[in-house]
Image (cartoon, rainbow over all chains, first blue to last red; front, side, top):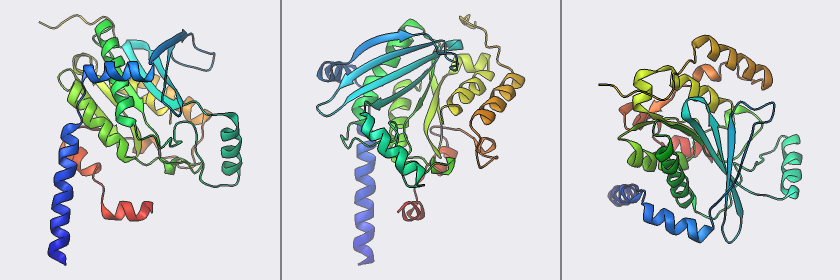
Length: 216
Length: 63
């Protein structure tokens, strides 16, 4: 019995390793996904008075079930903070507010699970856009945040999800020549920092971290 | 020779302190040490592998 379990464990580990090796970015795949999901730039907006960013770029795409919104906030020193979420109707938010007020598990647009099982496809679209930004501004750094599985009204719910480890694999695979990927296990997000800028200005990391923290 | 960067990063420790102070005031946390525990690790290092490891205990606690 123990031997069977160990054998099963080894098989699973091999399978996981294989899946991780398959997590690689392909521009061809990204172009295909852009067409399939109708990826499009919507607009750039200037910040509201309570926001720190210089500009907000908004993109959108559609799956068969949901419309998604992508926000790319542009900060000083060519730092871009990326997030995405499904567009949900107002009934959803009313229901979640009620759950929150009762101290129960609740979701927001970032933590809501669409169950579409497409995070890698979305990440491929985002990496493609990051590469576009890098073509224009090669010293850019990025921050991103995924989502905790659910919220309980306090910061202790911000545990890392499996998703962020997979995100990091893909991001590191694509940007490791020019950037370092830094993450926090309690939080589904991280930084992709330009190595050359970081070498010249180590304080860039503090700046990017502070901005990321403010989105917790 | 180093390439000339298109910007100069002028973010200081004091500016960071001020930023975080405002952040704490606008969004008070019950765990006041929350931001002190903020410690990013670099992908691919042994520290990253250790901290991102999922143990049976984590899964059980989560369930």
